[in-house]
Length: 398
Image: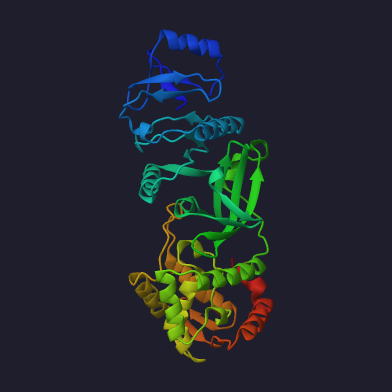
């Protein structure tokens, strides 16, 4: 940690400009104490590591259980100095008695309280959600920022995220957004317009800024340009089908068996199955899979003119969840969001692509049935025609 109490009750913040000899003299003449637990802490003034305070061995302080790495200390210090340059008065490691938490950095802007949590190592979903809700309940806006080295980028617009990293997603006016910071490169990394193609793989825009290039407003209300999605989506969807069919696993086998029982082939599905929709991150199950289940249960039996109540579609979706064939994803920062919205967005997109007509918000009419291709060449031809006709609609919907 970077802040400790002195014997006279004053706080000593190592982020301020200090001469090493002055700090060494202080260390030799007075003790320092943890602001949270009151225990004595040791001032470390090494030449290789960032100066910091450390609990003595055997401490039972809560803050001791999350030991800070050099990476975390450096990131916290860099963001603290960046916030000073933004004209706010940030405070490092101040314990909030209302929230009963100690954010890395706290500040106030336009009468709003903010808590910056720079998280470099995994914590459980329960802890993340508890901290987030504690802040919100007590009128504080949490700003979770992921350690930049956690992002596993696998292409110009591709990355792999694990369940911990998905927790940092939040929905903005411009789409799903994930902020990260890397103190080693001294760069903010923004993932914009993020859309999952599988349980881990995402297609996303990437923007990189130095602290001098980024304003606080850019972090609080990011503006992101949309990038051409559907062509990349098609490519990655084809790769997903190939990998899904090749690798074994209980859930995969059950899905492939159900395809077989329905006389279907993963490579010969209608092009309306596996579409990107705005709320896809709320469902951990890949879009191709959960949309296939809706086809199995509802759409393959429909004829032109049939009425499809939304509650019927939602009922079969929830049944698949109970049967553990569809898995939802918890995103604590997406307050008020629900997978129900994702299902409704899919129905609306089917309306925009000529399959359905929306009679009202809860009732749809079948216009054209899903066409199942009889061969891979036919599937490619159908998909080409579908995306040429509706590609811009799909992009604009996202």
